[in-house]
Length: 111
Length: 113
Image (cartoon, rainbow over all chains, first blue to last red; front, side, top):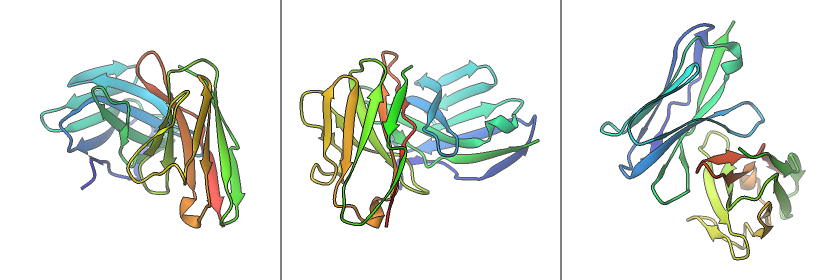
């Protein structure tokens, strides 16, 4: 079993839709959770960074962490064609900088 | 954040040869890392590049195959040695900034024939 599971997609939505991206994990020691966006032939770009459980909002993006269920989510409101990319979840333990990634979900937003 | 550049951006190499990838950051950073992103797989940490000492390798990665240098706080190199087609991948460097988050370079796309 992988430490972090993420549906590879692709997830296709129309412009303006609310998108929900999710990851599950098995290591209860993970305390820091990140979402990266990766456009084709580019490096990952940090979108959201949260610590422990709870919600964090930044513009159209909301990150949720439910440590009791070992489940994290990224919501994108009013999705745009420019949001079409692969979204990677990542997480790590306290005191360690090694990031453990999901395989990424490819998102396609059609005009 | 930090501005990170990598050279080369892509290369096609022959089996048995070696390639050195460079990573340059626009500011001094304490920690630099090298990751591999194989098709359909998650990013995997190869090693942590330590300034002034030997790199720290993750399980499954060895110094003979992936020698790393870090001569100062803004620069690191990763060499992929004695390449085989299984080494075809995207290689990414990342840096840890003061906000305790990692930022990634644009990646080097390697194809081994």
